[in-house]
Structures are given as structure tokens and as C-alpha cells.
Image 1: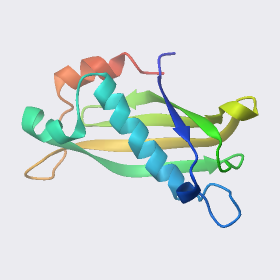
Image 2 (image 1 turned 180 degrees about the vertical axis):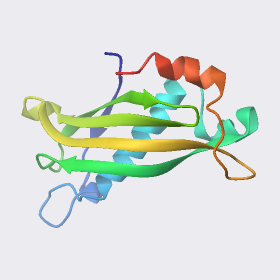
Image 3 (image 1 turned 90 degrees about the vertical axis):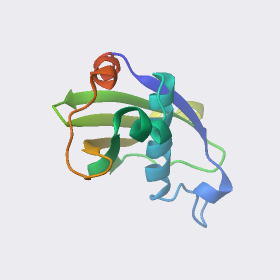
Length: 138
């Protein structure tokens, strides 16, 4: 299975008063992971509109919090694609804590839709992106 990896260090700003990762921080980690995934295949969110006339929007997200993350932990975010249709795709993003024997911290499933950047209506995934995404289908 091909996946994109990214390391995330937990800073004070990511935690609640008890030093546990605040649940909303995981949304930020997932967004960063999707952005770096795109960069690593040669694209940037800021250029999708100029290159292809599209943007990606999150339609749905399922999150399972399995084990807490703590201040100063180093998490590894694995991102892969589970499913791809004409204008939408589902990414799986899984966080493991490297300094705690790769314990599973959080598992996320994110449904994204490709939309025309002007009409904000569903649009086909551009062929150039589709070809790159297919390499990461789980």
C-alpha cells in the first residue's frame, strides 16, 4: 500500500490545559497532511485554481480518537486514498505516535469533492491529478 508520510511534533499550542492534544488540532494536522501530499506529487492547493480551474472541498469527515497524543510527542501521519470517483475521492489519514511504539492515536476518513473554482459545482478530477492519486489508492 502506497501512502504519504509526514511527521508532526506536538507543541503546547496543540494541547489543552492537561497537555493532551485538543481534539480540534487533529483537523489541522489532517489539513497539513493533505497539503503536503499534494506538494509531494507536484501540486499546491494555491495553484489548483490556476492550473485546472478547480478546488477541493471537504464534504464529510469521520474521526476516531483511539489514544491521546501528548505535548512533545512525535506523530507520524499516513495519508492514502481509499476510493476515487469522477469528482470525489476519500482519503484515509492515520496518526501513530512514534515515541510510544507506534501506538494508533487517531484514524480519519475524509471525503473530498473537486469543484469548479468559479461555479463552485462538482467537476471531474483533472486527469493529471487522477494519475498521481491512483498511485496512492489503498
